[in-house]
Image (cartoon, rainbow, N blue to C red):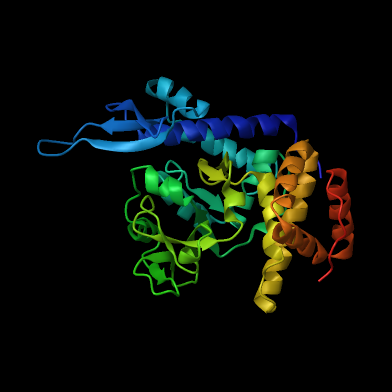
Length: 361
C-alpha cells in the first residue's frame, strides 16, 4: 500500500481545515460571543447567543476545552471565517474521482451530516464503526477498498463523564433522524430502560449509541443515561474506552465535506483485533469477525505507508499491558486471521516489540 500523491494529501488537509471552519461558523453566528468558564480547575469555552426576541432567554452552548489549540484558533478568528461550500464540493469531487479516496454511501453521509450539523461532534461524541473507517483514507493519505466499508448502520460513542459534565445537549435525536428519513423509530434496550439506545428505519438501517463500560457491577447490562445526547441512553461496551481515547478530527467526503471526530486509526486497528475475538460464533458473527480483521489488516498496512509505525507501537503496547484478558483478546483475534495475514501481523507486532505466541482458536 502506498500513499497517494502529495498534491492530493495537501488538498485533503486543506479541505479538512475548511470544513471544520465552516462547521464552526455555522454553530456560532457572528452576533454572539465566546466566554471562558472554569469547571473543576479546567477552562472551557462556551458561546452566548443573543435572545431571538423579547421574552426569550440568552442561549449558552458548550464549545470545547480552552487548551485545545484548534478550538482556540477558531475562537480568535471566527469573525473572519467564510463558508466556501462550492470550493469544498470541488475538492471532494477531485479527491473521490481523481485521488480514489473513499466516500461513504449517500444515506450514511446524510445521517452523519445531519447529526454533525446538530452538534454531536461539538459535544465530543465520536463516530465509530465502518463509516468512521471510510474517513481513514483521507486522514492517512491512502486508498482503502470500498468493499471494507459497506455498512447498514452508523455508531456513535461518547464518554459518560463528558456527557454528564458538558452542560449542553443535542436536540431530540429522533427528530434529527426523521428529518432525513421519517420512518426512523426508537429501539429500546433489552433491560427495559425507558430511553432508547438507538433507532432503526424501515429498511433496517440502524443508528446506535455506545459508551465505555464503567466497571462496577451496578452498571452491568444497563444502558447509561447520556445527558448530552438528546434524550438517548448508550450501550456500555468493554474495551470501548480504549477505542475513543484521544480521538482525531477528519473529513468525510460527502457533498461539500463533513467534519467528523473518529478514533485514532492506531486504536481503531488494535480494537478491531480485540472485538473480532469476541464475536458470537454464528454465521453473522463470523462475517462480522472477517470484516473486523480485514479492516485491522488494512489499517496496519496504511499506518506503515503513512510512517505511523511508532504511533501504532505505543498504542499496541498500551493494549498489551492492560492485562491478561487484553493479551488473550489480541492473540485470539490474530489467530482468527487467514494464515498469510496472521503471519504478517505477528511479524509486525514482533517488530513493534511485542513478542508472543499466537493463539489459534
